[in-house]
Image (cartoon, rainbow, N blue to C red; front, side, top):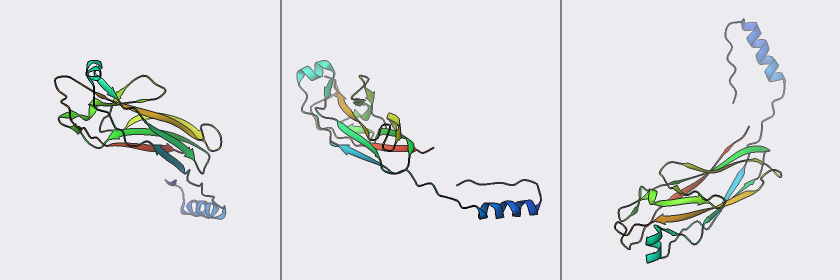
Length: 165
């Protein structure tokens, strides 16, 4: 919603402007509706082996695939974010020892309690990057001396944010 602030001028000018604005039809821009679909939301790790401890991590065999599909509107910027809702994985293991990466990148990032940008694209309905998708892979860091065999549980949130010009 735009706000028009008049400073100075006469009352007649303000009334004329109001009448002119009311006389011309205003068309509302429809909100851009976008659907986020997630596949494979539960991430599980098999029990780590000695080789995993030697490597310092254990990969999850599957990832989470996200698909962003524009439903209405025209152009928008879509952003995928990830964060944890818990500070630890249990057993004294910090959430930062759970890492993520996009399937098209080799760099691993620690999961945090604040939103981290996974990917951002300009999307045009029925055109550029519509729909678009990617996969997030996970791994858990391991240490012989601090990580006893245990069940670790963490929660994460994947969020779609969009900006419509």
